Image (cartoon, rainbow, N blue to C red; front, side, top):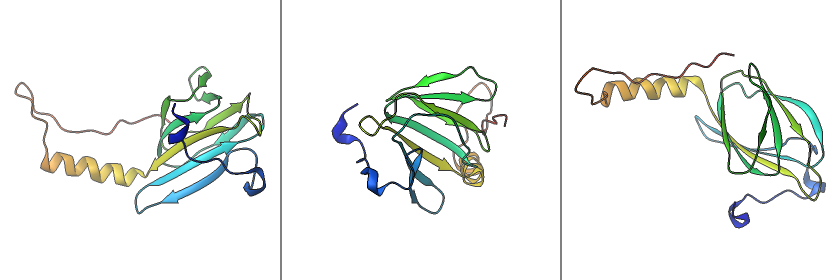
Length: 141
Protein backbone atom coordinates (compact mmCIF):
# COMPACT_ATOMS: atom_id res chain seq x y z
CA UNK A 1 0.00 0.00 0.00
CA UNK A 2 1.30 3.46 -0.88
CA UNK A 3 2.57 5.00 2.39
CA UNK A 4 1.75 8.53 1.17
CA UNK A 5 -1.95 7.68 1.07
CA UNK A 6 -2.12 6.42 4.66
CA UNK A 7 -3.42 8.56 7.52
CA UNK A 8 -0.64 10.01 9.66
CA UNK A 9 0.30 8.16 12.81
CA UNK A 10 0.06 9.81 16.21
CA UNK A 11 3.26 10.40 18.12
CA UNK A 12 3.43 8.28 21.30
CA UNK A 13 2.96 11.31 23.59
CA UNK A 14 -0.33 12.14 21.81
CA UNK A 15 -1.85 8.69 22.35
CA UNK A 16 -4.40 8.04 25.08
CA UNK A 17 -3.55 4.32 24.93
CA UNK A 18 -0.97 2.21 23.11
CA UNK A 19 -3.56 -0.46 22.22
CA UNK A 20 -6.40 0.42 19.81
CA UNK A 21 -6.03 4.19 20.23
CA UNK A 22 -9.14 5.52 18.49
CA UNK A 23 -9.50 8.67 16.41
CA UNK A 24 -13.16 9.27 15.54
CA UNK A 25 -14.71 11.39 12.78
CA UNK A 26 -18.50 11.34 12.70
CA UNK A 27 -21.30 12.50 10.44
CA UNK A 28 -25.06 12.13 10.86
CA UNK A 29 -25.25 8.48 9.91
CA UNK A 30 -21.66 7.25 9.79
CA UNK A 31 -18.56 7.00 11.93
CA UNK A 32 -15.06 6.86 10.52
CA UNK A 33 -12.63 5.39 13.04
CA UNK A 34 -8.88 5.06 12.78
CA UNK A 35 -7.39 2.63 15.28
CA UNK A 36 -3.66 2.52 16.05
CA UNK A 37 -1.83 -0.01 18.20
CA UNK A 38 1.78 0.55 19.25
CA UNK A 39 2.50 -2.51 21.42
CA UNK A 40 1.82 -6.23 21.29
CA UNK A 41 -1.45 -7.40 22.83
CA UNK A 42 -3.69 -10.46 22.71
CA UNK A 43 -7.43 -10.99 22.58
CA UNK A 44 -8.33 -7.30 22.77
CA UNK A 45 -12.16 -7.17 22.68
CA UNK A 46 -13.88 -4.73 20.33
CA UNK A 47 -17.54 -4.34 19.39
CA UNK A 48 -18.82 -1.33 17.49
CA UNK A 49 -22.60 -1.77 17.83
CA UNK A 50 -23.19 -1.21 14.11
CA UNK A 51 -22.33 -2.89 10.86
CA UNK A 52 -18.64 -2.12 10.35
CA UNK A 53 -16.47 -2.18 7.25
CA UNK A 54 -12.83 -2.42 8.31
CA UNK A 55 -9.72 -2.08 6.18
CA UNK A 56 -6.25 -2.87 7.44
CA UNK A 57 -3.78 -0.09 6.60
CA UNK A 58 -0.49 -1.04 8.32
CA UNK A 59 0.91 -3.85 10.39
CA UNK A 60 -0.67 -7.19 11.19
CA UNK A 61 -3.59 -8.32 13.32
CA UNK A 62 -4.92 -11.77 14.06
CA UNK A 63 -8.72 -11.66 14.09
CA UNK A 64 -10.91 -13.94 16.19
CA UNK A 65 -14.58 -13.78 15.12
CA UNK A 66 -17.29 -15.99 16.55
CA UNK A 67 -17.74 -19.24 14.65
CA UNK A 68 -14.67 -18.77 12.45
CA UNK A 69 -11.07 -19.88 12.76
CA UNK A 70 -8.61 -17.10 13.60
CA UNK A 71 -7.04 -15.43 10.57
CA UNK A 72 -4.25 -12.98 9.78
CA UNK A 73 -5.47 -9.52 8.80
CA UNK A 74 -2.99 -7.65 6.62
CA UNK A 75 -2.76 -4.27 4.81
CA UNK A 76 -5.10 -3.99 1.83
CA UNK A 77 -7.57 -6.52 3.23
CA UNK A 78 -11.11 -5.68 4.38
CA UNK A 79 -13.53 -7.36 6.75
CA UNK A 80 -17.23 -6.67 7.31
CA UNK A 81 -18.37 -7.23 10.89
CA UNK A 82 -22.05 -7.49 11.82
CA UNK A 83 -23.95 -5.47 14.39
CA UNK A 84 -22.96 -6.24 17.97
CA UNK A 85 -20.46 -8.86 16.75
CA UNK A 86 -17.52 -9.17 19.11
CA UNK A 87 -14.06 -9.09 17.59
CA UNK A 88 -11.11 -10.29 19.60
CA UNK A 89 -7.86 -9.04 18.16
CA UNK A 90 -4.22 -10.04 18.60
CA UNK A 91 -1.42 -7.62 17.75
CA UNK A 92 1.58 -9.96 17.48
CA UNK A 93 4.01 -7.52 15.84
CA UNK A 94 2.91 -4.04 16.97
CA UNK A 95 5.62 -1.76 18.37
CA UNK A 96 6.25 1.98 18.58
CA UNK A 97 8.32 1.68 15.39
CA UNK A 98 5.93 -0.74 13.65
CA UNK A 99 2.36 0.11 14.72
CA UNK A 100 -0.82 -1.32 13.30
CA UNK A 101 -3.38 1.01 11.77
CA UNK A 102 -6.91 0.07 10.77
CA UNK A 103 -9.80 2.06 9.34
CA UNK A 104 -13.35 1.22 10.43
CA UNK A 105 -16.54 2.73 8.99
CA UNK A 106 -19.57 2.10 11.21
CA UNK A 107 -23.03 2.30 9.63
CA UNK A 108 -26.09 2.14 11.92
CA UNK A 109 -28.72 -0.51 11.13
CA UNK A 110 -31.48 2.07 10.64
CA UNK A 111 -29.37 3.80 7.96
CA UNK A 112 -28.96 0.50 6.12
CA UNK A 113 -32.67 -0.27 6.51
CA UNK A 114 -33.77 3.12 5.15
CA UNK A 115 -31.31 2.85 2.24
CA UNK A 116 -32.63 -0.61 1.32
CA UNK A 117 -36.21 0.67 1.55
CA UNK A 118 -35.34 3.62 -0.70
CA UNK A 119 -33.70 1.29 -3.23
CA UNK A 120 -36.80 -0.90 -3.29
CA UNK A 121 -39.08 2.10 -3.81
CA UNK A 122 -37.08 3.89 -6.48
CA UNK A 123 -34.81 1.31 -8.12
CA UNK A 124 -36.44 -2.11 -8.26
CA UNK A 125 -34.16 -4.82 -9.58
CA UNK A 126 -34.24 -4.97 -13.37
CA UNK A 127 -34.54 -8.70 -13.99
CA UNK A 128 -36.75 -10.02 -16.79
CA UNK A 129 -37.09 -13.53 -15.44
CA UNK A 130 -38.11 -12.78 -11.85
CA UNK A 131 -39.03 -9.73 -9.83
CA UNK A 132 -36.60 -8.95 -7.05
CA UNK A 133 -36.15 -6.74 -4.08
CA UNK A 134 -33.02 -5.44 -2.43
CA UNK A 135 -32.39 -7.14 0.89
CA UNK A 136 -30.08 -6.67 3.83
CA UNK A 137 -27.61 -9.39 4.64
CA UNK A 138 -28.38 -10.60 8.14
CA UNK A 139 -25.32 -11.76 10.03
CA UNK A 140 -25.57 -13.84 13.19
CA UNK A 141 -24.41 -12.14 16.36
